[in-house]
Every structure is written in structure tokens, then in C-alpha cells.
Image 1: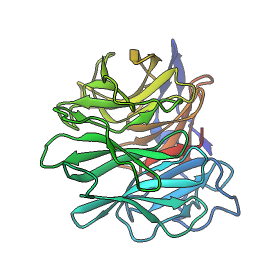
Image 2: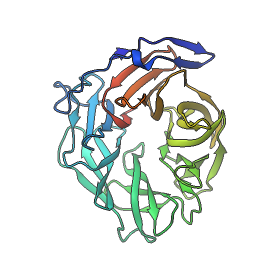
Image 3: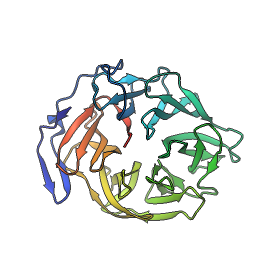
Length: 320
């Protein structure tokens, strides 16, 4: 892991990152094994060039991640809380399915297919699945029927118990993140997937959905919100009025998200897809000026920023 050689400074509690070009990129080893290290904790991700799912353990070689799929068409992998499985979306032609694959390797299994008969309104265009804390279910985004809006649903990991979480929705919902106790998910919400200008607290028991406003100049959630391991904070990639995307963190109290604070400042790249890697550490993507997108870590306590995995996108970290 290479620490950034660009300047760093603190602005209050905000970590400032500069000179992305000062990061020495790692050589892209392109798939293969993980140096004999069994996956127990680390990143799952896909690569744009082949659209397969990869994992790399924190103790392994980031240049040589383990490839878990080989047919392409994979999107938005998410690691289970026990670290043994990854759920992802498989695109084939114009259809999508939810699949799981062991982090130790093996044949992927289909969890749920588009337009399954248990989805009364019709389900298509699956996106951004995530495991529940107990590993017994998955919540994901889908398009119901002919609606132009997206909704949230839950499916058990044995393929049973399909449940719409946002029935009769008139707005769109983005990538969900579970609260640690599994009682609800938090997701961006708005008039469309590109205009998620609120944060929705969605109970899994059918209770009332509540909404929080964005702040700190954030116009929309770009891709994902992520609840911290202890449930006290929320990270998100916020799109600014300038068009840039940066990582923000806010306090979570009950169902409400407080004022957002920018985590990084001064970098030249786009920042997206936050994922908690510890109580005070985030992993997220940085893409600078069309160069290769990689996963970086930011320690909110010490101020260190380092390149964790090169040639990666849509990362998920686990278990935490």
C-alpha cells in the first residue's frame, strides 16, 4: 500500500488531499490468485475492462486479486458480514439477475431473476444489492413494472420471501445501506437516480419512511450512502453544484442524518463509492483526469490517505 506523497492538511476535522499525481500507482497484475492469503477481510470490486468480480484480502497482494467470475457482465458486488460470500448483479442482454459467489471461489448461484412471479408489479433493472447484517437476506434496487422510478426490495438468501420495501413509490431510491441492527436501510431518494436529493430511512417492518435533507452544498447523492459499523455516522458521495463529487460524512441520530462535513478537500479527482473499512476509516474510489480509477483509504483520525487497490471500481468492503 503506497502512501500519497502529495500535501495533506487538516481543516478542522476535514482531511485535505492534494496532488493525486504524487501517488505512485501499483502495477496492474490483472487477476490470478491472492498470494496464498485466504480472503477474510478486504475489498470486493469489479474491473471495467472485463466486468468480473474480484476480491483482495487486506493481507494479500493488491496487484494480484482473486477473480471470482469469468463471464463478465458483473456490477455492484457486496461482501457479506461474515466475509464468506459476495452478492452482485449479473447483466446478460437486457435482463438482470442477483447472483452470489463464495469469496473462496466457486460457481456463482442465482438468487433472484428479473420478472420473477413473486414480484407482483414486475421487477427489472436490478442494482446495488447489499447483505443484511445477519446474512439472511439481501436488499436491492429495482425498477417495478413500467415505472420510471426505482424501488427497494428484500429477498431471503435462499430465494424466498420477496418483499417490496417502498410500495407505490412515486420517487426513486438509490443504493441501500443497512443499519447495524438490521431494522432498516438508509438510501438516497429523489425524483430520479441522478437526482437523489434526500436521504431515506426505510424500515424493514413496513413502518413509515422518513427523510433527511442534504447539506454542505451537496446537491445529490451520486452513487451510495454507507452507514458506519456502529451506526453513528453516514458517508456518501455528494455531487456539488460545481459538478464535482466528493466524500461527506454526517452524524446519524435515530432516523435522521445531521449536517454533512466534507472528508477530503483539495484533490483534483472525482471521489465516489464510499465504504467503511473501520470505525474511523473509509475506502472510496478516486478517478483523476481520466487516469486509472483505484480504491483509496482515508483514515479520518490520522489523516493518512493511501492507494489500496489499483484498477478497480464499485468497491465494497467487508466484513466490518
